[in-house]
Length: 411
Ligand code: LLP
Image (cartoon, rainbow, N blue to C red; front, side, top):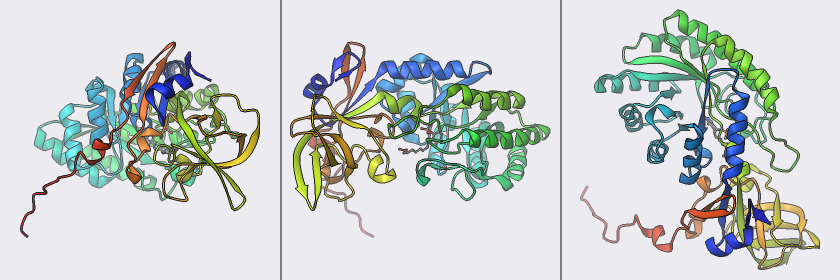
């Protein structure tokens, strides 16, 4: 088994396991395809950093011409650190702090997507203090029907915590337009992730279009319509990669009608298929009629199976003729620590290298050090070359922030 032209086993031997491996070719290919699909309208891709904020991937996307979408001060820091210009950055998220808003204004980023009236008023005040005008996108919850693979990744239906509720949108737009230190430059939505149909995009953009005319009538200098991320990818259990032509037919005419630059915030679409997780099989064990493959990666590296019931295709890097029905589990002391349940796959034996597919998005970024497990290494492959782009954590990293001699204060 190869990752591009490099033997998976070679990477595992040199970088150790567990390790995430990302293909530069996949990212380049997907970026070019998506960019081409949107060629009919003025647009900008703002890669959603939350899917994978690895420096190697950020550098690659920056070189391809991508901007980024960040959702925290930490992600803003990472984006700037990876060399993105302020005008390449948009900032979203339902709970930005005053400090984060202030940092975004100081950096002079392209747009801050605001999710409530309270946040809008706070931003206006901070911008006033800084003597600047905040470029605001109003994130609207279009309250459309959204089908995703798991309820946790739907965001644009009525009652979700994200965005300004649709029935309040017109009033909040009017407030925003009246504020002195805010310029309403965009309208924004993100209806969900791993979307099973494009209808939510269609309905959502229609709703943004009617709000856009209202905003313009009030004098808003609207420049952008941001339709969020959410493109699905094939994980191997029946879901398919998106039909970009069909997506284009939904998105382009609707956006053209609004007459603003289209912004998109895909994360998974670029990162998921570019990455695999390599893990080593430690033991086999039978218990209560179950057949376990115990490996050195688990929920601490890839939370998606246990948190969203997500499917990731798993195979061995070598050749194993036999097949077995197994639970693939990790070493973490939790019954919920698994990568696959009741899975028919190759009869993996101790020492075998497991390749867990489509793990590039929401993998490493959601990993934890639970059970004091040091975080995995991240490796980038580009043709015949590969490099460790994030070192494996050491035990010392686990205690780095702890004070041996805490500074006790009196009440
Ligand atoms: N924009 C906003 C405002 C978002 O909230 C998200 C994802 C994206 C863009 C990027 O969505 P994408 O293109 O990747 O679907 N951890 C979950 C996914 C959570 C998505 C959160 N928001 C998972 O592993 O499936």
